[in-house]
Image 1: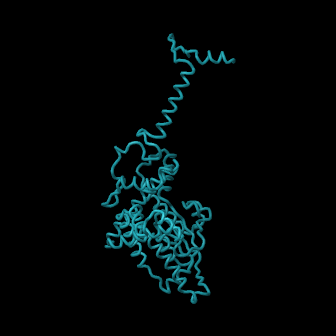
Image 2: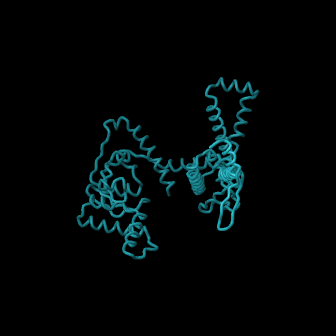
Length: 363
């Protein structure tokens, strides 16, 4: 097509007929122009939102949203606190796939903090203004050390800014650590954890037990999976399956399997066929050799109470209903145990303290 013909084509009015009527929508140039405008408007809407704010700020309008995002006992988590924490998390610079996770993570952190503060209140833990000030000083010193690892660089900076060291510390305290209420909450949680962990002790007998191992096999029935199986079976048979209690169904299935085991059925074969623990089912429920501290408390207490060859009753954990079998027991105390006993004790104490805090938080 020549340039002249192209000009005529782009200037010619576009027409089309619907029945007996003829419609004109302008020339191709006009059509393309308005199409570009439309694309730009749509793109701007999705990029900036109806509020006209750029970046990754809060979605659209929050006018209709509740001022509270969660209730934790008698306490609440406000949307203002949530939005402030979200802003400080780098939400504005996060990718689309990260934002939903960040929102969930921030909400969970605020809920956990509320639970911890309520726990501190129950324990009668308090924080004084002097302790808050001392923590501020500690945070300021850490911040300055991080910014100026070399003392001479700090001296040069202070000379350039014509500031004394105390003036600079006060500036950092005011700008970065001025929220004394946040520091007070942090100290309450730290004191609560110290209180929980401080109750943990390790005797010589406890230390020797820490070297015990058991070879474990288990079968797990998860309520959600059992409910799904029953619903699918009912659907295939054309029966109604509404209002099912997954927990009750899982326990019933576990009891049926335990009855089969007691009658002599092969534990590994049943675990391979029925267990919902995808990590061990293929191996007949075999978890290998495990020590204390490697399993959830309810499972651990039941497993270590069994003798070699024994099978447990029904054991409930957050994962579901377990049947446990211990196939071996051993205790391998290191040759240097007596010599390095305190070092081993320190390691076990640290491990138990960490577990004690995790268990406290779970409860």
